[in-house]
Length: 243
Image (cartoon, helix red, strand yellow):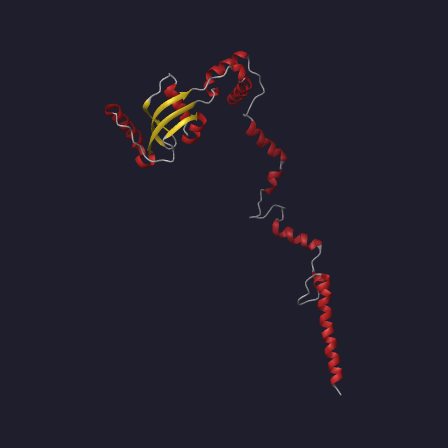
């Protein structure tokens, strides 16, 4: 006689469990674990308590950031300090003064090689690497050149990532690959119209070289009127550094 009430109790209990699961599923939230959600919510600290905890953790009694929290973080927001630093950095960058015609012409005459158009060189090169010869690289190159001049033996250098022969390479490309103003050094070898083969030694970022120049097209120097704006800017920069 006691079975029906027991079955009824079991059914009701099952319905209660299923109903609870369905409730949380419909709400699309996680079901509470050990405590009722409303109870947890009631135990959360209010805004004032949270703010007090944050302040006590990040700042000391004087309102200064505690150690390890970037005590100088407010300094970067000081606009007057930033303006002063910027003014110091840019103080000598340029000037607005306009040069006289004499000043501009004199400056251009002194620096006209800087405005030369790119030259082109066709040449062979051998390298004596500093990584292999150290401080003896220049001596090794000079000995190889002397051996060539006396006996006609073509210089043999070391292996390197550089090409052994370049065809119509611009001075810009040469500078980029060799470094150490190598294009200007080639120009200095041919500026009198000669095409030396072999000659050197001349240095680069990679080592010491002997070169044989087959052909060279020297870049023209433009007239001042063609590069006037650039020369004025360069003159201003030069003057600002002396102020």
